[in-house]
Image (tube, rainbow over all chains, first blue to last red; front, side, top):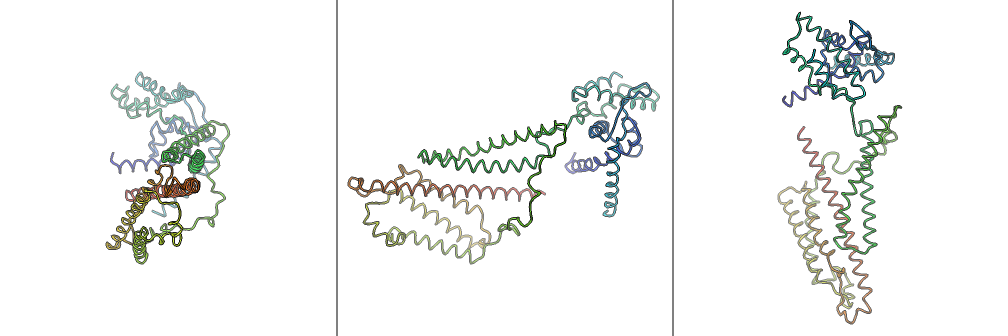
Length: 109
Length: 346
């Protein structure tokens, strides 16, 4: 990877990081487990690696934004995640922030 | 699927031990669901090669496990600015206190040999290292306590809340628009005064009244005379001033007088340290001697000792000021050079 490609990759990851959190929180307004969440995001054009998504879910849960529970579905135990009440509040705030940034960036571009 | 189980087993070895089983159970459920989808798409089980290609896409076990590890810092970003601020303060004061204590100790022990002064300087790196180590250790403990405490504690920020723009120091010379260029009149004056000083200094041996005025009469009548080291010192001063004058004249001729090279003053000052070093190395601080020791020792011995001691301490102070100035200038120049290099790289 050349220096420019490496720089681009770093900046791209930085740009995506915050967006991914917002997307995950948005998707988890409805309860899902890891794999279906990944599929749902991919169907909307947001591909995300397993090694990024699953640890992200754990971190968001540790921060109190998600709640989770183990439940059996299709003869398999799965961990289901959904937004916690704190998570809903923060998600609303982040969404407003995102929309404001989006409008600003669009007007700048 | 055996290959998936082997993969998960390898991942498990790199996970935080308290949550290994929970994470592996979740990963297994997710990856098995993914595998089932793949096999449903193909309408058959994955071949060994396809399974290996899929696992390869997931990343190595270490890559898969790494993001589950809590981010670990010795000193985290929340307290790092405070750490840096305290470190700078502590190191500065440690060096200042160390120098003061060492100078007092050397003076008290009455061992003012160059080796004793070298010992003072020798202690500075160790003092810096020990101070930095203690400050770092304290902040590492604070970081550990903060990250492992149940309550969310916010460290105090570096003192910035109470600052006022009115208290900002005035602009330093040369900071606003690069170094202020030296005027032509300034450069010419420096050369003229350099020449006059050299001429005056060269005349002093034949006409000592130029240095001590009417005191020369008392000097000739006094029982004291200068030690031979004074001749060496005299010619070193001549040499240093000739070099400085030649350098300044060359600047004037070449037209480089508006911005003299900063290294120039450092070199001249460093060379100027040599005669001071010569004076410091004089045995028993014998800068002034008695003309007839056998006769005058009884009457003037004490006065001689106190004259020599005064000269010695003056040289020590001068030497210390020059060394500190050199260290400061050298540090400033190095920092400027580093900044310029970084700016040229951007």
